[in-house]
Image (cartoon, rainbow, N blue to C red; front, side):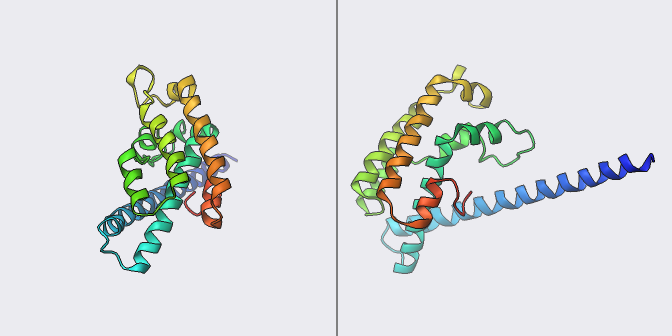
Length: 187
């Protein structure tokens, strides 16, 4: 009888280790994907990318941005991921959300290169400004609970939801729509 809890504990530890391993693999994959996108994006911006690379980078970049818009719009997702001590992926934090969201200069460049439409640009500039102007309560970017309770952050997430819905009206691409709905490959 006494062996059952020990076996149960061992199984639980094995499952936890497996989940952490899977999370680590996803984190490495996400970092690798972003590095490849960033490297190839520079080729696109310098107009040295082949057509196939350009198409691939544009598609990946747009999906990645639309994923971020969804993630910023979903406070429940943030609450589940930012406050979960078992999550080791640094992506799931306020600091990562804010620092990885594209800035105005980057968005201007992508509009200039035709990677986003003028309407998408306006929507994303508005959201980018809100995201980057938000200040974590007390200046502590690591206090996820305080950020999640901050009315100013609620305004940012509401703006992100508005942007998400507007982009859903504009985009016809199925994979981009899936990212905006939180059901894409990148999630």
